[in-house]
Amino acid sequence: MNNKTIDLERIGRANARLDAYLTEHPGALGERSESEWLEIVKGVLMDKQTFSAKEAAEILGVTAETIRRAIRKKTLKAAKVGKDFRISRTDLQEYYRDLGGGELFSDGQ
Figure (cartoon, rainbow, N blue to C red):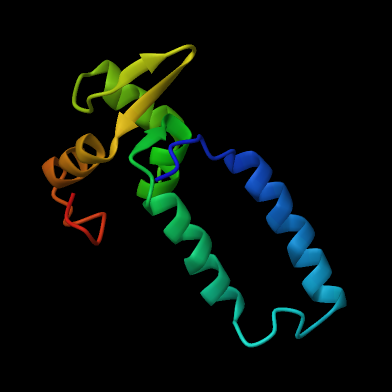
């Protein structure tokens, strides 16, 4: 497993460049559709065991500030590492369940 932090801003910039390229070169994705490629990228993120506040926000579809607020309120467990937080996969799942959500991860963790 790879526990390196994913730089979501870098992914966003790469996605913008890819969108521009695909506009100029239709069919460049080959057999896979754009949504299939996005599912592959999402799968990489979902295989991680720890997440930054930004990554957790991306998974839940909220802002990073919402995640930081939940950490300050102690409704979401996190470890402070440097200037950012790290949230375990298990704690993110528990937080989501406590909010009334179901399973975030297909493995049930």
